[in-house]
Amino acid sequence: MEKLKAILLILGVTAGSTALSAQTKAVADIPFDFTVSTVTMPAGEYVLQSASPAGDMLRLINKDTGKSISVLAPRTNASYRGDATATGAVIFDRYGDQRFFSEVWTQGGLHQRVLPGKLEKEHNSRGREAKLETISVPVTGLK
Image 1 (spheres, rainbow, N blue to C red):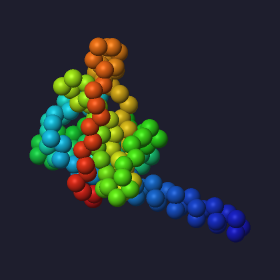
Image 2: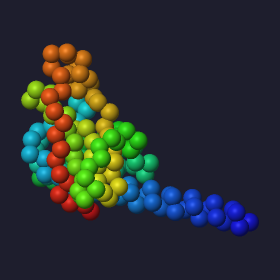
Image 3: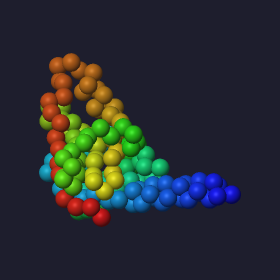
Image 4: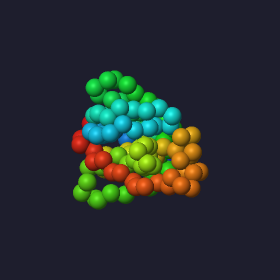
């Protein structure tokens, strides 16, 4: 019976921490237009939040326009590891003059990476237009 109570306690703590991290919101001021999947989002201040309890969906909301998008962004795909003292970062891949949202990383628990969409895959398949750089935009706040 004690073993069962211990297992239930561990499951309750794990479920609670998953729900808590799913409510973490990051704020970032993105100074350029960018593409998420096949949608172009305007420059501006964005709220980024996990959109599912499992942490496999990410929602980006432009605070000025209210325009938002939810995309598949599994936590297990996140690869960025910033400075331990940094609040976090929003990562973009740049091909020519196009920037593609890649992932968000925060000390508060968001570690999600978007799978490349059709447009980004097209850029990857063209040998002449390889990825030029990875751009990191700092997270300006957590909620």
